Image (cartoon, rainbow, N blue to C red; front, side, top):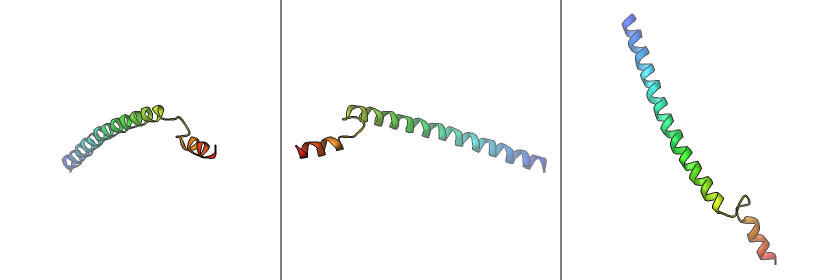
Length: 60
């Protein structure tokens, strides 16, 4: 009985470690996507996203 519990504990710890490794990779990919999106937004027209300028030009 003890060996079965020990084996289950090892499997749970191994599974948790694999999950944590996967979550680290997912976090790294999301960080890269966020940085790229932030860089692209920074090159645009700023916070307003250009929407206000479009309406401003059509009035005058």
